[in-house]
Length: 217
Image (cartoon, rainbow, N blue to C red):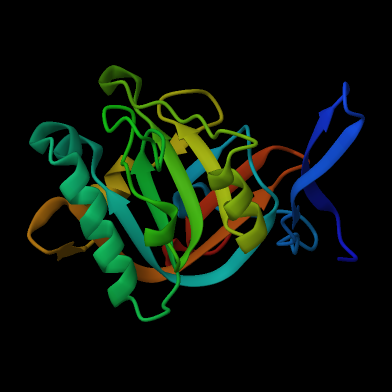
């Protein structure tokens, strides 16, 4: 393949048998020249300090946000997940960043939105939002097919733990910024604007920003 690869294999010692199960290229979205640019604090919507993949989305116009309070209160977990899939399909190729509570793609809807990877084909960045009081805690499962698919497709990922040091969840922005509803589900909000994502896997810092919130201080 000419690139770093993830290889899964099996070995049966009694038969001296080696089987190659699968091999996939590693994630190649590593374009972050010069690191994360200087930013003003007011531009930062989300910031992470661990488990950050490496890359940048210098320009994107759409954020899909799952409001954790509404999601938890209405408890239409699978209905919400399927509506995200419909939103993704209706995007007609338009990329977006998904911000959702807990573990995205979890089989347990109490831990996160049970959306399937096939329902996120236009997602270019994924943020798992940790809300401890509601039991939503990010936990990306390295080695799973979900994570491998993120790598192969170059989808950026970071977890944000609300309330922890060096983590930022700008709740005021999400409440004050104009948003569009989706299919009468109050838990799903679509924000449009001038956004960017910068994630530095070496320093373990990632940010999602609103570029229209002002220049650097």
